[in-house]
Image 1 (tube, rainbow, N blue to C red):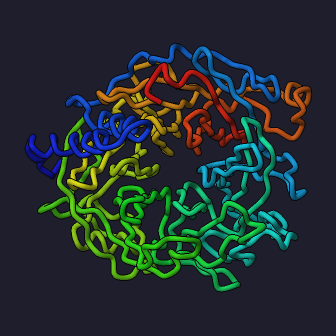
Image 2 (tube, rainbow, N blue to C red):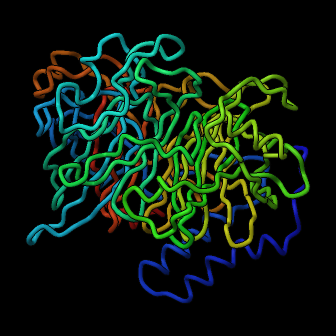
Length: 513
């Protein structure tokens, strides 16, 4: 590390900010504040270790929808699958594949029922047929780009979103909501009932309809009332976006970028802080994270609980083309926003992914896995009141945590992350054959909450009523889109390989989630 950690008084401030909020409020808010404070109060060590789970050991559990043991869960937990790849949705269209980031954008009362609306990304890239664009032939589905790109991301852009409705513990319906975009990986929920869906690509190419890619778009909870906007939120930058999250206290957004060794955490300060649908189109100030008094600090290799003071540098042109960058790490491919942030001293991360704001703390992941030096993923916590950045989870072993991607904070303040790794990388345990949902403990350790168990023949899937589903062993494909219902009773998540959405319930109080 080229940066110097700061003194203990700042550590106490990081712990104290959320504790003070917990004392001021009661009930769930106090519980959340207390747990968030615990999550940021890890025990200093070189790296995290794998711990026993308070929920118990996982084992295969049959899906209440199909009867198939899609995943492994602790005792007492159950789940219902929905929205499989190829399933026909309420609008008559087939459910797109490659389920990815997802969020609960709205909870509402419908008569005596409680209804939850989620928006789900589909991380599809490009193809040769315009008919494969999400919503092709349907005027009710907004589409950003129906043109063809001749180079780079060659062809038609097939990514987009679908909306799902969950009512009183049951799946109700789904429909296509946005299309014509490239690799909608992650995103984030606004506070006004919409989802920001983010393209993951650093590209300077232009389609034959004059469209560039690498932007953020906004999708409402109900597109029958308000269609998704086909205008990109240019102020949030053109880059290989991953997740974004809003701080409700300020209206500022925090964004991650998955551009290997050429990315930092970003902050977007909207010009319109009143919020509301399309308010982000008014622009704002994009900024990059920098360590105080340190130029271009390499933050890829922290120790557990290591802390740093941070500040922000302005990015003048969020839509600048990307280019190669001669950085302190060598020549790297960088987005236009990062080129400008780096020139002003922005920090360097490996490959930032998930992002979540809870109780004044920004949690975000760095999924980079390397064998030498040993790295298998990090999770950071940035306290917004003190400006202190802390490494609350440091995996140097894929058995402890394997490339943390999407993450979420439960309403009780527990930290959960989705693995998106493989079977390579530093490993002190058995060979990796399944991707997992992992819990981060307050001391910085991790434990297993769930495992991907998808391994079925075409005959098994047909017998379960899913003849169009992907067959074969997909247990080592990623989890994604983890998010809780507002009351904390349901965990929603996606299995990307087969393209399935799950609603998981059980004895959450047995652990921190």
